[in-house]
Image (cartoon, rainbow, N blue to C red; front, top):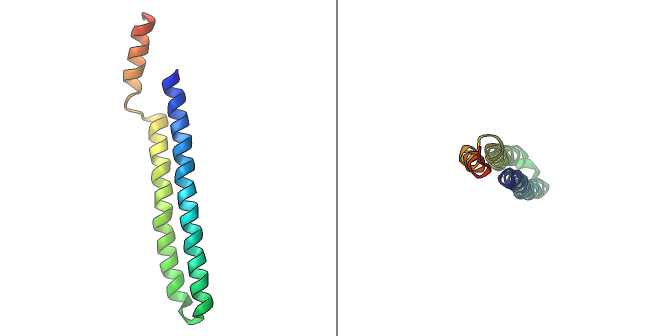
Length: 92
């Protein structure tokens, strides 16, 4: 049972760190884009396009963190090994 508890904790902490990093990155990207538009309003179209591409790349990191967390929770390759060891230890 400890194995599954650690898996849940790892998934939660991994998502927390993953979303914290991407949130900070997105905030800095938008801040820089707004500063760029305020300095040169004529370049707002190019700045907006580049910002959106950058935000999509940053957001993909959060999606990767989600995928890894879901793998840890639901498709863990060590699940069968741990359950086999627990069954042997319990005498089943």
